[in-house]
Image (tube, rainbow, N blue to C red; front, side, top):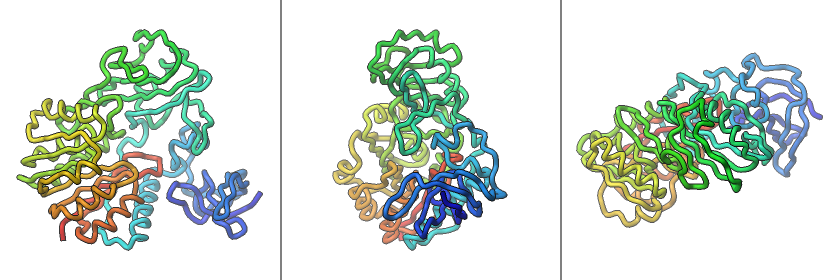
Length: 399
C-alpha cells in the first residue's frame, strides 16, 4: 500500500501520482487528492493502481449517479462536474496539439445540453444469461440493468431483451430520435423470437446473425431538415443532439458552387449537408450497406449532386482524377491513411474540413497538413459526455 498525492489527470481521466519515483495511473482519483492505493499492474515504465482509501478528497469531486461507474469503464469523468469535464477535454486537446508544435486559434467548446441519456447505440455482451459490458481492459462482464448514457428506449429494450433468455452472445441496440429501436443479435443458440416480447419499445427490426428476421434491418433518422436511412451496421453519430450542431457547422463552412470530396462518408450525412451548397459531392465509403444508405439518402432528400463510391479510401483516392475545392474527412480512430493524407497534401483544395474522434491521430495528421494548410478553426463537440473521448472539427485553409 502507498499513500500518494494526485498531481493531475492523464488523457484517459486517470489520476497521476508517483510511487517510488515511477509514474502511476490511478482510476477514480482527482488532482490534489491524497489516497492510499495498491498497485494492480507494474511494468518497467509505469504502474497502475486503485484507490483503497481517500485521505483527502478534491473539492471538485461530486457523487456519481451511475452505480457501475467505478467498475464499468464506459464513462470515466462522472465524478467531476459537467463543466469541469469540458475543461479537461479542452486542456487535453491543447496539450496534445502543443506537443506537436501546432499553431491553432482559440479552441471553441460546444457543450451537450443533455449529458445523460444521449447515446443512440449500445454494444453489449451476454454471458451465462447476464447482459452487460466488459470491464475496461478485461473480459470480466459487468451486469448492467440501466446505462445512464443511453437513450431511455434502449434501456427499456435491455429490460425486454432478458425475456429471450439468451445465455451467450452479443447484441447491438440502436435507436433514432423517434425512439424506434433496431436490434442486432449474434448467438449460436436457437431463440424463439416473438415481437410481442418487446412490449416496452417501438421495435422496427430484429437482425439475428446478420439476417433480418423481423421488420427491417434499418431505420430512418431525421436531422437538420434531412432524412437519413441508417442500416444496423452503418456508422452514424451516437449523439444526435450534438451531431446536429456538428452537421450544421459543416454546412456553414461549405462555399457555394464547389466540388466536394467526402472521405469515410458513412451513410452520407456530411455529404448531404455539403450538397446543399456544393455543385457536386463524391462520397467514398468501405461498408456496402452504408453506401446503399447513402444512395437512398440522396434520393430521399432530392440531392442529385451526390455520387457515392464503394471502396477503401486508401485505394480509391489514388485513382481519382477530379479536382476538389473542399475535402471532408471523418476517418476512424486511427486517422488518415497515407494515401488519403498524400491526396490532401497534393490536392490544392482550398479548404479541408477534418472531423476527428481521436486528438492524437488528429494532431499527427495536422502536423503533416500544416505544411500546406493553415488551421482556421478548431471546435470541440462534446459528443461523448462524461467520457474522455473527444470529437473535434477542424477547418483548414490552403496557404
